[in-house]
Amino acid sequence: MDAAPQPSPNPSASTAATATTTAARPAAATRRQPLSRDSSLMPRYLELIRSGTKTVEGRIRAGKWADVIPGDIFRFFSTQAPPSSTLPANTNTNSVSVRCRAITVRQYDSFQAMLEGEGLAACLPGVQSLEEGVEVYRSIPGYREREAVEGVVAVGLELLLTDDC
Image 1 (cartoon, rainbow, N blue to C red):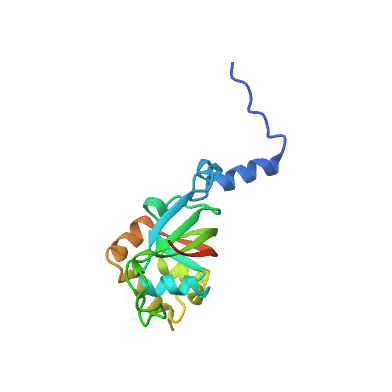
Image 2: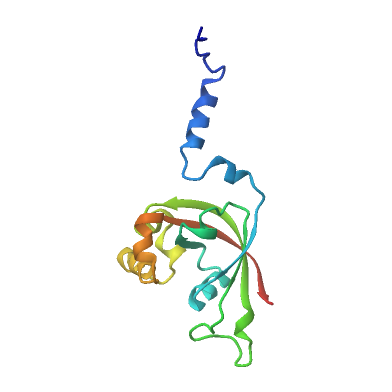
């Protein structure tokens, strides 16, 4: 004999569980400890993060960017001198880096949706229009093709420490 299904003792718990399981990120991924990660950045964006002007990093949702959680620590680096650099001529730009903590992580289907949701100025300071911002991301090799397939992730950043490692 089959037993009749038992109602959940807490109907709101059932709703909460449904909301968690329908999120883009599996629930198990959010239970892990924060990770330390390294990632390269174009010099211009490294300097904007260092200055506190750029507060959101947008990427294709793949590889290490597919499972970012709040609390992950990033060391962003560039091996090139930033344009119109304020660094002294003898500075070793091969080791300039910035450390940040991921404070928010939001997933989007497109760069346009990400820029609308996070704000153009937070993602791309100095870019004047949404269309220009979308094109900045899509001009990165491979991003135009991968955007529709993998989606994008917006990581809100808290500047921790500027290193010259």
